[in-house]
Image (cartoon, rainbow, N blue to C red):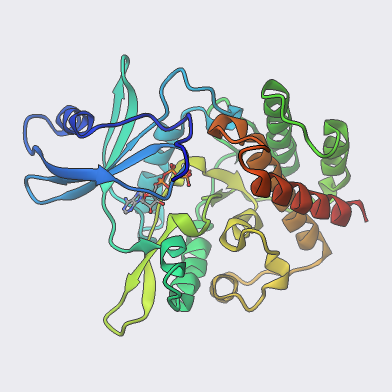
Length: 334
Ligand SMILES: Nc1ncnc2c1ncn2[C@@H]1O[C@H](COP(=O)(O)OP(=O)(O)OP(=O)(O)O)[C@@H](O)[C@H]1O
């Protein structure tokens, strides 16, 4: 078993009972509970209430946990994202928010309804045919992207801008500042990364509408279950805490993590997306996809120490990230 991340607070069944009481009052009480695996940032438990409801309790990192700059206020952000999707894209299945708890002494937590199904990451271990569920994900993403924000980037006092190039450059800058704070050695000098983003400003500037992006739809955050015909279908998108507003193409990176969306045109998620929201894969779009992968790999590199990971404890992850970062740098330099 891997060690928990320093961002994951230890939680006991007594804590769950106390947080259920703080969320719902004396009734309903807690009937049963247990940890939910699969995440690496918050502490997540399922709970059965004594009125029969099944819920998920997500406990945010403690107030004194050191996080990256864009990770400020993620519990409130997840609350906002799920409510926004329920109102503005109601056909996309996300967990209903039951309570957002804030206790000045303890910290923050979120209680949502437990959605049916298992994550695609989990189901892949059984070798299940998940093509229909992945196609559903593409269609759901296209619906989410119809929601428009009033500025680009993150909400609150985090990286944002009135244009997409401005917001994207601010996001990269914040990650580079995080890298300095955490003494993360990057495979390339920060100034070269900044120059690369500036150089591709024209490709980013094609994006004129701040679309709602989930950002983190890797296989662990997509739930699916068998439909009556036996095929796996989408039952939920979870973990909405990292949402931002920007280029829809940015959301096509995590669903094919480690691969290139532009080479996977027959991938069911991309087929579903393009059937619902056709787009051109022209030279500017290809450059943007490359920039977004660069951003994600940079983020995954910079977040390692805050998750308790070092090149020594996680050599494979470290080497893989250095390799894929380098590939994007080469592609963007040409
Ligand atoms: N409402 C829900 N219904 C069913 N399962 C859920 C729900 N919320 C979370 N899960 C399960 O719990 C796992 C962990 O939750 P979540 O991804 O929100 O935690 P996290 O620590 O923020 O993860 P990450 O490391 O991806 O940021 C998910 O991968 C999913 O399998």
